[in-house]
Length: 171
Image (cartoon, rainbow, N blue to C red; front, side, top):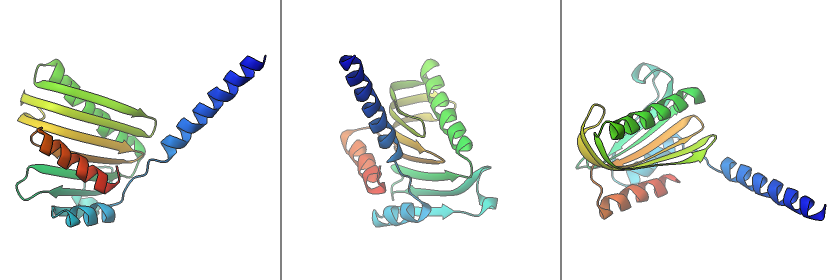
């Protein structure tokens, strides 16, 4: 009986820690996105006028470096389900490209519940969605927000720049 209680307590403790870890993931807002990307000398645009946004989006920001080698995007949706749908569509498109031999590389997914992360590292070849390009891309979906950073190459310096951007944004 003592062993059972210890296992039960341990199991409940681990589950509580996982719950707390999932709750600690926070999203940014458009102002922080703009400030961070401006500080990094990226060209930034932020939209919150519903006439300029796609259906279901509340606000969106896009940032590009001077050479268009890197792109960061921030999209907050009015409804979490719209964010989930767009995130899942993106994952499905990339998996379909791999299945159709239009992508050669690694696709890594992690997270659960309100937190999802996608890392794509490889080369698209005549892909319907992505054309012909080499990419390193990291995408986060937290609740009703998607943040993505893409490099249009995947060597070490490009991966470091993507990771640097994400760190500055708080991810």
